[in-house]
Length: 429
Image (cartoon, rainbow, N blue to C red; front, side, top):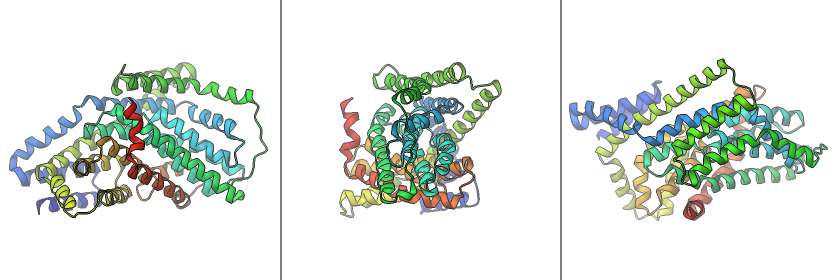
């Protein structure tokens, strides 16, 4: 009965407007007090400090800093320009280019909102100006922006690795194939959609020479080289993800200052402040969620849930499908960071008991989060696009995202029922 009371307290605190970290920490502390009395005031700080005292988490603020430095440069617009010049022979090339640019920007930022803002501010106005439907323009950008969560370096993978003790490097490798598959699926959907309804994407008579195409790469080769250096150092074993994040942050700083000269002293301080605020907020949620998770483990909630579900006799795929649907529903009302740190300690023992790999579960969980960030009411990508494209209403953006959510769900089901696809590349390393 005590866990039910603690859960009610958590939901009530969130409902009345408590910050998520405070709601998690306070409800967890109440649960610990109910279970262990005054010892709770010793357990709670130990849980928080123990979770945050992890070397892997150093990568979190550094990758966010790397993304913010590159966000201050024209890399986003340069990626979109390059994609347009190389893909303009395709019907719907601007929409498909926004997917490609978002995927590439995700590889240099790891932050979904940054991708939506950087690409959306350029791609959507261009598509609308050239007669693309508002639905296609908004849906392509808002859904493709979520690719940053899956394509390494990925902030959600770092958080999942810290909570689950799965190797962050393995998670990064495991996210490559699903990221490519999802980008291709979104692009294929756009292509089929505009072939069936040409009015949504008028054919372009603009043509680019091979010289112009190669010239478009001149403003993105530095970012591409940085990604290769960061990920290459991780996959080759020369650096840990945290050390590689330091390389990435330093490299992004040099690109912003020496190459693009877009980093003034005021902008530099602003980026440091933004990075500190975002990192601090995420770390607070992670630490307080550990208090809540330790309480659940203390009263054996994960074990009891595992025993109850495995005793039903349902096939593993049915239980797994129910877990995926639960994560999608929770993702509509809980932010991505909270969802990872709260549900992983509860669901991971069940997943392992069903015979699945924790690495695979981390990958499909992040695929779930890609759906979460484009579904209301907490779909942050929706509001990020609205912020950079005020000509679009939130209602329009939500409606435009729904067909793309269906594509994301189909890709999720592919990797849920065929785990070997996502584990293939890590198995080669």
